[in-house]
Amino acid sequence: MAYKRPAIKKKECGQYMLPLRDALNVLNGKWKIIILLALSVKEYRFKELQNEIHGIAGKMLSKELKELVQNDLVKRTVHDTMPISIVYSITAYGRSLENVIEELRKWGIKHRNRMIK
Amino acid sequence: MAYKRPAIKKKECGQYMLPLRDALNVLNGKWKIIILLALSVKEYRFKELQNEIHGIAGKMLSKELKELVQNDLVKRTVHDTMPISIVYSITAYGRSLENVIEELRKWGIKHRNRMIK
DNA sequence: GTTGCCGGTTTACTTTTGTAAACTAAGTTT
DNA sequence: AAACTTAGTTTACAAAAGTAAACCGGCAAC
Image 1 (cartoon, rainbow over the protein chains, first blue to last red):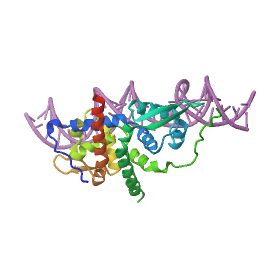
Image 2: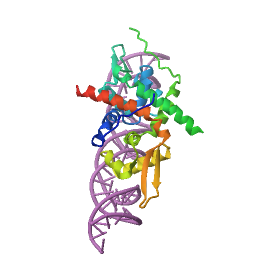
Image 3: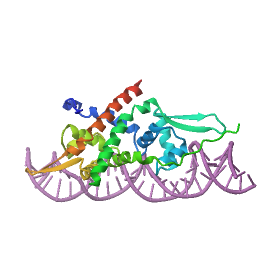
Image 4: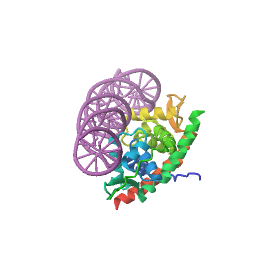
């Protein structure tokens, strides 16, 4: 599908990029999109997720998850078992990012192939 | 009770996220995607671009452009006029990111509407 | 009762990212 | 000559993002 941007008048220059900046403010940093990709496959517990995402420090995972929960992209569930277990899962709203993430991942595959050559 | 805590699978399945990490490594930071959006509309000279992207400092724009040029997403052209003029434009490879950027921008619009409510 | 897992937090530190403002070295305009 | 524009760089600094590793309280397993 060929992308076609509507013509932009000089006066409104700069406005068209505000939504992009909004999106980037929510997804900022090195980890959030990767966390969302992991959680789009299945739900994880904290240490599980840390093992799955190679290289992330506990402090960062903790911080990033908090922000994702605040933005309703991820849900934190406490299972009232003995002992309790805490599970992170993607929300419906988080799933609305799956297109974006998959486009990005697909581009990454092409990019990797291009770099190897 | 005799509750058995579910064991963590040590099984390795994190390969699928490598392309995503590749993509994010190229597009990291606060500005690169915004720069690419601006350049997808039209080419710009340095100061023009700085005016278009509200809030970016010269140092950052300079640095980000260098990295984008290195990755062949942006082209720097010196026009041999008198005086010379230098123009930044998006490359064909940079255009291959337009799907990603537009998906992100569309999501940003939905996100903004959601937050306003 | 000691070891170890779980869900994080704390500490201490380095690196990256960001800003504003001054500056440079050309050329152009007045 | 003085002032302005262009394309950045340099300086000096602050804030954000990142790391490894130690730590904590609750529980469970051996």
